[in-house]
Picture 1 (spheres, protein in one colour):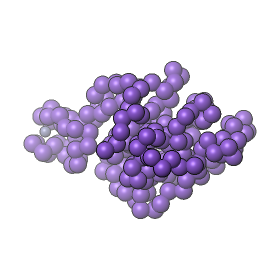
Picture 2 (cartoon, rainbow, N blue to C red):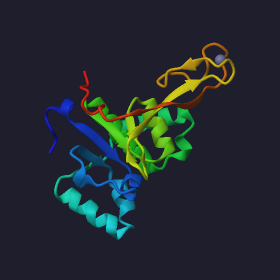
Picture 3 (cartoon, helix red, strand yellow):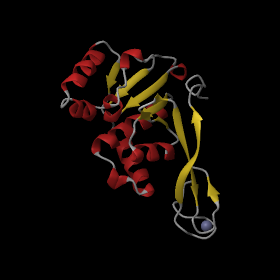
Picture 4 (tube, rainbow, N blue to C red):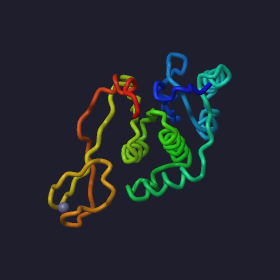
Length: 188
Ligand SMILES: [Zn+2]
């Protein structure tokens, strides 16, 4: 099922909110991945479950169990970001699978409406797609800034505090960009 030429395939990692918001795996030409815990959460909704199970049976979705080492890495990042207590085990699994795919050379995007998943994903330089009522259109880009001296930092800046004055950094959306072409971009 995996495409050997990974750089040509855009991978989407789906959390439960993606399915609830109506993500249709059959209309997606991408490599769709989710985690076992999402399946457990979807089991509570019989209509969603039917479509979900057909998608798995026909190879439209792969259910991937995350490795502990990636989960640990995600937890460390989330902890530094102050988001760890906001993330469920399912959320951490989604992020861990996305991180693994990214490391394996896929270009993944996480489909989620969860703010904390989005935040940690952006810290890991993994794109995310919020599924609003309008559908998949925008990716929110983050910028980190110091509320003390207003110095701006890139979203992947490693430290939690300002390098100038030591104040704990905050984040805000930088700008909304259309993600339409990101899938075609090759990962070098
Ligand atoms: Zn500062």
